[in-house]
Amino acid sequence: SLNNYLGLANHPEIRKVDAEAAQQYGLAYPMGARMMSGNSNHHEQLERELAAFEGKEDAILMNFGYQGIMSAIDAVCGRHDVIVYDAESHACIIDGLRLHPGHRYVFKHN
Image (tube, rainbow, N blue to C red; front, side):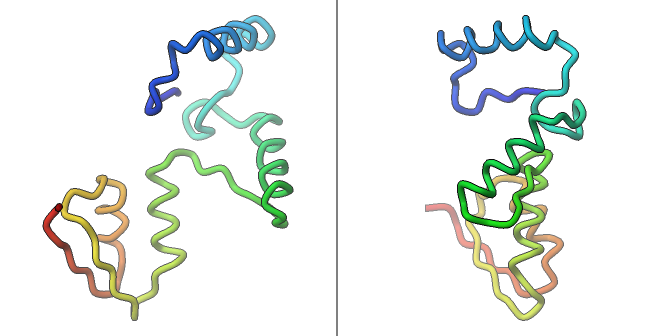
């Protein structure tokens, strides 16, 4: 349950920490997205640390970016809001906008 969006998967420090974690936890321990591989105390600890860092009561780690964008659009935008978006927006944004009950306007990329 790993994506390499930042291209760091083969960075020497990442590989070192990955090997140490595999040695400590094995390869079956939940990692990454909870929905894909399960929950762990580490997920919950990270939520607490993120909330404390931001000075907030709580934080939620979304299962994946797609869910985060869909949830954010739904939470922030109401039926009286208008959304203007790029025609080449990521699929998660487009799908989130399809559920938006208000007006949507697309503009040509660039």
